[in-house]
Image (tube, rainbow, N blue to C red):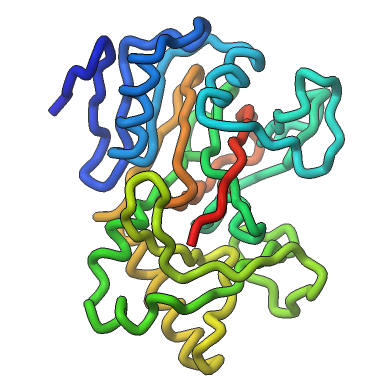
Length: 280
Ligand SMILES: [Fe+2]
């Protein structure tokens, strides 16, 4: 059921996570009260969606800055100062901007889980979308953690897993021969969200390769079980994009995946991320 907070409307998009926010024009600066309501909706729903936004890069930068300092693009190469935080996630090669080439489907992951301080928020703005597919699935990692058997939670709480950026350009496969120099970081299997105080499962199919304290076999079996559990439809919301959607998700308590789409069609998203903090 939709709820009106201050002057905005928050409409849940699924039982798992996701809410559409209405009554906001992101081409304009936001007042403190509106911002507070948006922030609360973000904590409550993990993923927030603004439809029909006709926003520039500058507008997206301004919106993201409300939530913290922005990250520079990973490569450190950007077209100009205004684009230093902007990456095009696309299968189009002629954008003229820093581009992450991404085609087809992609396994569940949490952005930058291979860094010590993964970004807290990611935003994507839809500029071009394929007719079918290229949807983004979001999973609620609080729910995934909270619904594990108590005995398993007890066993896993406090353990650490390695997250590594090494999928050899294939987002549907973890590397067999892990490159020791690939970006990687050990994070707790369950982390406590610094704002909500809730624990969230923090392992994902694309980038988590071992739980250190377990034997290799037990780690493999446990991770497989955790992946299958956390990706269940009851914990996920599938976002079907429209041009003009601005979506912001919380990487501390959600993960996401992409569904397949026709490589002959153009898909172009503008991504800006907000720097993270120490989460244990
Ligand atoms: Fe991602």
